Length: 116
Length: 111
Image (cartoon, rainbow over all chains, first blue to last red; front, side, top):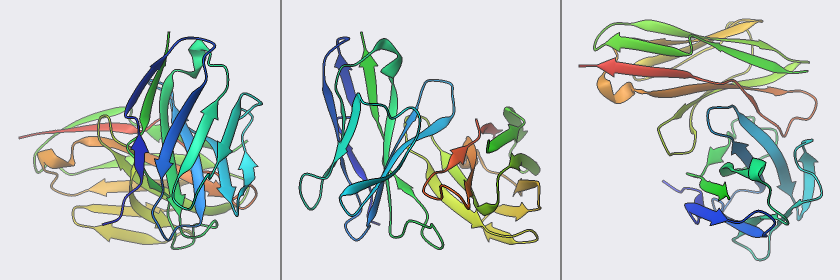
């Protein structure tokens, strides 16, 4: 069964550094998402992306975050200047359609980001 | 603000001991309610989508039901491999790209 692939599985960075988290969504999916889960807390929506632009974002997704689909297969999340509170598991997801009618989100296994 | 509350936080069952997990929600017009399973260190794995009150979905030992205020995930005769965290999420009619998750129920099934 096709799956969402994320790399790296674990990233350690120093505060203030830039990180790029990478994702390969399922090939025929058109909508892409980033969620995050701080240890022991809920999975939280960050951003959705369709047709090469952001379609919706949360309050968490401020100017330090950006997303890009640099080619036909990859989808990236960039955090410009990491803070300690950015430490979390970041999940990429994709779906065939945005409304999710018969088109649920499929999640990758996440990148654990540790900011020291 | 859309909210999802799941109970209990944790549940320990003996193999074969059936039980139910609860998901209460408040949302500004429900577009869909989703159940996911999450194993340690993994991403959420899709189980079910429910759209309207009265709807039921089944998959192996799991059955999900929906009312206007809550959803239940019934686990019949669970096995140790059913041990996982079960997440409930809602999608509203407004801002429909976003899922709002609960904190989940950690289920442990002992042999």
